Image (tube, rainbow, N blue to C red):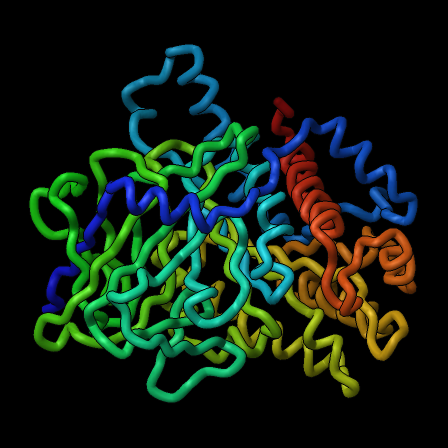
Length: 437
């Protein structure tokens, strides 16, 4: 039998000060629909006509029905006519797997904030200890090892998995050389942000024998140990919403060494819970090789799984569309088997450069993703076509929408792509007969 794992939460001013010291300005809350449209229209090479949802098997219908149900609950609650049968938590869960374009956080932030503004904010979702494994982290949160109380951290990623250090749902894992550590979690908002990302529940994803983590009695809502439903996941409820939290780990018998994968931050409200999980340089095949990623995805109970990859596959000199098709299926097929109620959505990447010229492999990448969607009955958004298609990387670079490496994009470039994905998804919702609000 697994030993309960507990968590320590400290609300001391020192913790708050440490969070504030590391805070960077975050993105503004979503602008109105009209300003979004004007923003996209300012780039004439972006094809809004191509920004459509391809869903030949109506794979997204159950997802849209759940969004509509969430809408109905909000409407009834606002009118104070919610019946007893409607009582309880109503959430729509989304997992978004990807590569460096998702890890950076800009593209996914646009999608998340628009979903939260439109359908309700159920929490920040998964935050991942990227910086503890020496990588870049989205700017709306921070995960820090408190100096003087931590060992040396080792890490593993889906693209360079290390023997003996398993990888979980987030695509990375971090492990300290000592069981005695303090880890600080913070969420940040901009001064004009209308979305509140404080949390009163934390779901920690970890190795089976990870060190124990204690809970401060002043904030812990549980009478005993936190819930353990899976051997890789521990839930803890808090009595108050916080934007910072310090965890203390220590050993207890065999619970002395093991990795941490990430933390899902939730607030107990009706709404969308959106988990963006990206790893630099990742391909479909990298994710597919990690059985624990597949197994742990079920704990997030996804209603929709978005897969945004293909850029790294396109970067190779020997791209083969049939090989790429099989690699897509290596990840999608077990995800569908593990999460049979979840809809699947594939997105094609915008074009980038290779050796100084627009990479021609992005066209076949897009066509193969669409062929897979048609064959397997999943949904598809052709971001490649919507951002201009063949040769479009030149326009993006000329309008300063690409980073200096001509592989990644500026924050504004990612905003365009995030809006295109959200708009296609939302227009599909409207197309199912649901009313825009």
